[in-house]
Image (tube, rainbow, N blue to C red; front, side):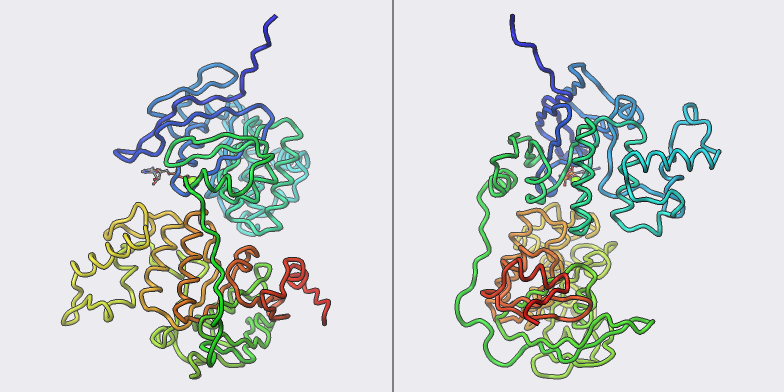
Length: 511
Ligand SMILES: Nc1ncnc2c1ncn2[C@@H]1O[C@H](COP(=O)(O)OP(=O)(O)O)[C@@H](O)[C@H]1O
Ligand SMILES: [Mg+2]
């Protein structure tokens, strides 16, 4: 007798897809076994979302074959994919924020099968049953607008499960979550797997891949390059396949760190909200030339306020900010920039860039005078475009041309535009918040290199990040924030992840 032939639940062969002359997928093979958690990894632009959209019936492939249970399938829309049990949670949620959880769960249900949709009581009961079945902590009557990002994501997952998805696709579900929310999501994934669902999980956070998955497929430039069991894979194996080469680990700088008078000096810096609660609580911190001080903390403990108080976007209630030894407490953001402050904000679309304006316009802001991009008050368009092209080359901003609206770039490439603009001024003091959030490993490596290079040139860097690994890789000293206060400032050589983790939760054993 021959061995029984085991057919994978889902098999893709030679799948290709282009948008006009842009090849998004050139050649993808993928086997997904029933009941596994299969991670798809790849840099931004590798084609992950395109591939998943094909599986979910949102896009149709130009070539290749898809087999479900060994039978060839083609989906002309998401409803057809839903009918055979494929559901997808998108990178950008598709919830109606003015409606309730229950209303969103049953939105777009086919009226033929669900003629009761106008019956609010039944709808609510169904929602309650669904929420209870998966033990999610959700109130069916809450409006989406009231929910945290993690809760919204759970509504999206339930929406997919409500269609009885046996294959659930999650497109970068962790990119928008805080570390505790990520752990909860991984718990949900494990639970779904235990119930026999098959999960396709996109991420480029390598740590998560390790913990949550059975196998990993890496896509690079639109092609599948490897599929391997997760057990035994190292993070650097995956990173190597993603970028096609080994990555540099951030180089630790030796000697000469933090010399001379402070470039940035915060004394007693305090900020309150409208109801008088202290968002920043008497922060004292000096950063010298060439020094990187990392601020660690759970998101929401004052880090955003700290970065904005230094940048001048929010006013301090008490205390002082000095740049290069000169008081800047009541100085406008513009004037602070003129004094050599660079700012890379955490929210690159809201604070860092003007999404509707072009790359050339964005990268030139603040650099018009220094780069002689104007003459007699008029913008020299050709000079500005040449400047933008130079930056696009130098910072390897992919998919860019000077006239492209910056909002059309991927997150990593937008971040490169912000950094190109800020670094052009060779700042004395640089405030960087969450510099690699949402970036893939290749772009993150580049950003880290830029931060280290700035410090090497003598810039004082205030680095705010909720990624401890980033804080440890780059910082000379580590300040831990908790409830608006800096609990302690540690030399990196004295800091351990354990100690910093305790401080992040407000536990100071030495105090
Ligand atoms: N609708 C579209 N039109 C044109 N190009 C697209 C479209 N969707 C994706 N692309 C391009 O296809 C490539 C793959 O994109 P995507 O699948 O979103 O990558 P990933 O999810 O891995 O970041 C990128 O270069 C992207 O710019
Ligand atoms: Mg994507």
